[in-house]
Image (cartoon, rainbow, N blue to C red; front, side):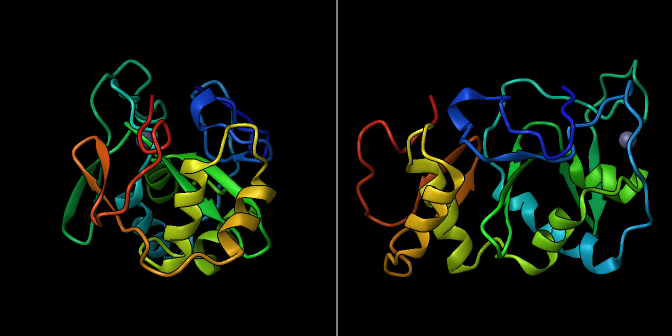
Amino acid sequence: MYFDDLTEYSYSQHHARPGLLNVGWLDVEHDFPTRVPSREFVESLWHFREWRIAMMRGYHSCESCDPESDDITIARFHGEEVRLGFAEIRVFSQTGEAFAAPDLIFHYVAVHHYAPPAQFVDAIVKGPKPGSAEYELLLDKFWKTKTDSTVEEVVEQARSGEPRNSVIWALQGLWWIPLTQRVIPAGHGRRA
Ligand SMILES: [Zn+2]
């Protein structure tokens, strides 16, 4: 599935929010900009693997490696192996932007030296990190707002102050499971 960088995200209607921007939706038909990534960028990007959302039943493999191959793309880093092509990540900038990228973006950057837009790289390196309270809150709000809520509204809600550790999300299997006893309003806690 190809989308131009920084166009509005529309891949999954359930996860779309007005103002959410695409990054890294590459395919073999379209050239992409390249640059050797900084170590800092790759290290920071790697952290997002544990916070994947929008899981798909099927998977997508890297077309740049071999357009004909259906092999699952595997990322290897720090002695760890992670299967990619099943899900997406969300990235938040310090200035209120939000980006939607396929989890394959780690492979695209590390292996093919895909150069995402500067504001995305900035958000990965300097923005809220997965596992931080700020990131949790943003992702939590993103999950629970309606699909017609704009990114600005989602970010505003997250910043308007909900107590820390109200909810901790962990990825278990294919679902996000709330670890605390917090009750998720009907229709807002799970993906359709
Ligand atoms: Zn590849």
